[in-house]
Image (cartoon, rainbow, N blue to C red; front, top):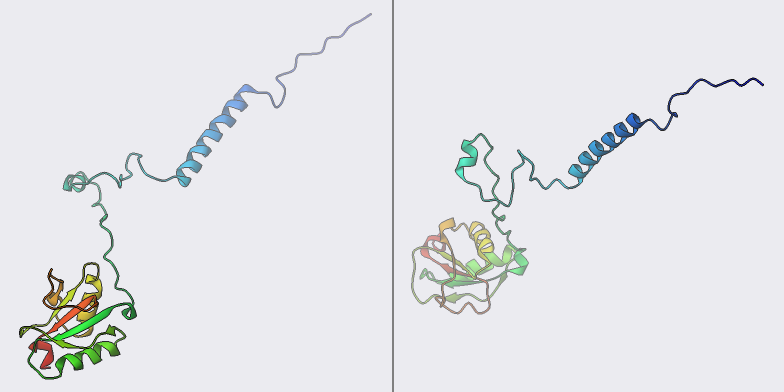
Length: 176
């Protein structure tokens, strides 16, 4: 009986250790990129950390100036949600009623005009806390200067009667 030996064969086609290592390395690299795309919260070199306090030194070291992390200024509410009362401090008869009509025509909720306890040359637009943006929008609508807007003092110069904005109408707007 004659026996023939088969020549030795190489490793099986799917069992190469080098191939397995290459596949694992590719999977790790792909996994790294996928995870980075899903959770890009920074923390890597060259990625600014938004939670850390930044100083002027960062820009001096060649980094870009950080974006402002301050909250955006509040937007004014729809005019129909803001109540306004006008107090005549101009001495011009009927000026508060006339200004109230103009403000109501712009869509604001208005209360009946009244007289201020003292006369004033300049108009003031006083807002309850939280209504500063609304007061600034109203000041623009009635052509009052931006510096006329302020937070209503405590105690207010007169009873706002439930209004969020008190316009103390001075001679600057009542006369013109």
